[in-house]
Length: 193
Image 1 (cartoon, rainbow, N blue to C red):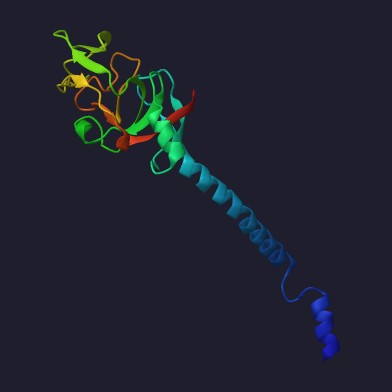
Image 2 (cartoon, rainbow, N blue to C red; image 1 turned 90 degrees about the horizontal axis):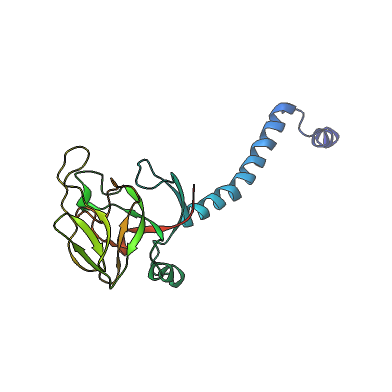
């Protein structure tokens, strides 16, 4: 009896067909390889994201965004505090824009004004930052929805004035979007195409 058991073990369990053993081995290998790939994708998606531009507000359509949502991290806080003119950021449009977009809609715009700069609007709805005209605010959207112009005043700490490059861009020149508070910030654009 013992001889038969040894023969069976040496043959690699002849009661299980070869294709089943190969399939099991392939499945175990796939699981072992998938785990590090899953961990890598998870780590990347926690730190980076893609944002798509479906409008004409900026000439680029795809943005690779480095997330800065963890404001407790000193490295992330320095990225936020160092935002300057021309930086592109991704942010949630917020509650004010609910007549036009859902609040969780992600926008990508360019920083055009930072803390300490003054926003003014003249009679012609031309928005100025520190006396320099930056854009004209249209009285209504393409769909005929009235648009209130941005509030005047000094941009406070923790907020930025953002714009797209297209004349129809829906951005900080309108009260609905307003100044972007850092709490709405998702991240900064690292690559765009």
